[in-house]
Length: 293
Image (cartoon, rainbow, N blue to C red; front, side):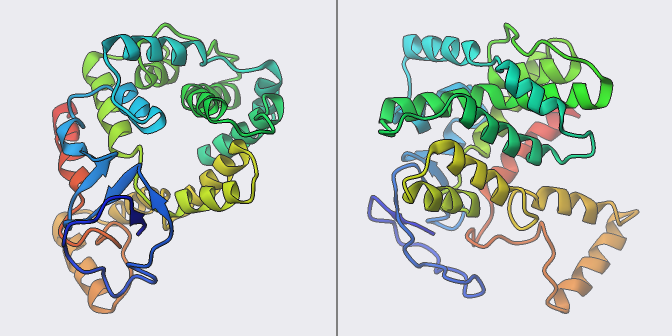
């Protein structure tokens, strides 16, 4: 948990089972998590107010540029991000060296690091330049991942610059080779918004430690990706899926999970170190899954 910039509302006490819960780790204006037990706010806005209605680029602008954009600012921002989807040839060459067996997070970690050597940050770490780097990484991470994927799995050098209107649409277009449906693109908006920020999680903390040494943004993000990859952080989704695949039916799953919990075994996907009531993202993404299926 971090020390918020505003006085937090009274809420559930931190879980005793989580090391250092409630200990101030730093200040942030970006995000607060679980202050009432099941809330998530970006710069003071409740994500439930816009998760299923906003475009991801609106929330990216809010997080990076500190306010919600008006119509003209959003249009200009989307045009900027669209222009940043391309990859330097030397980065493509590096991605072509990564085997098909590599984990996608390792690909992004490597791509970010290589890009930092090809287009390095200015020595003065100025704020406008930092925001430009954040925008470029958001715009091009999908390009990096899908260029590697198609080259390593299919031997194809794909064109990574599309005319899709959004980052989510661009990603799906590169993945499937055709423009996505409106419902798929909307689902990507919702998912990207829900998981865009989560206060002082492990990857954010890692990134801030690196940045705190005076290092560059690419190094900080590369380190953050390494932390995010772990099964106790972003990689938990993969572990949870592996757990689900162990069972043939709901009754079998419930009996096994209850036994494991009774034996005090940690089961990935059950419980949360900060939320004491529920994760507010769950109900939104479940509705997305239902609508798509």
